[in-house]
Length: 99
Image (cartoon, rainbow, N blue to C red):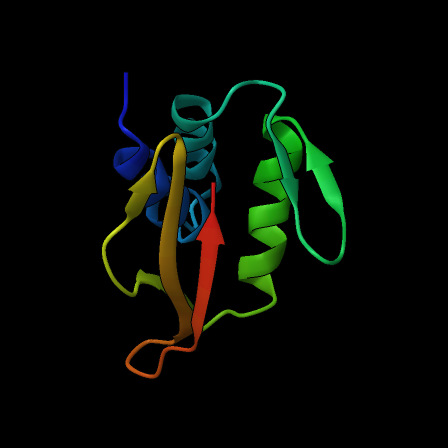
């Protein structure tokens, strides 16, 4: 079973940072339960295919941007927190995620 740290890194780098749809779909299958729900201010999507489409949409809207970890994953009980950057390579913009 993967640790929270491993899941957070996979979410960021193997799912949301992956531009190849096939590799991203494989990472989604390894990382998430089939009924995964992802929410952002725009919408809530459910399931592997919807998550794959959501990640593709985010990346398509920012073709020169990359996700990078902005520090270590922090874990408190069963919750993980990972600060991340999303911006042009070398000029990141700070954000954060909880799981």
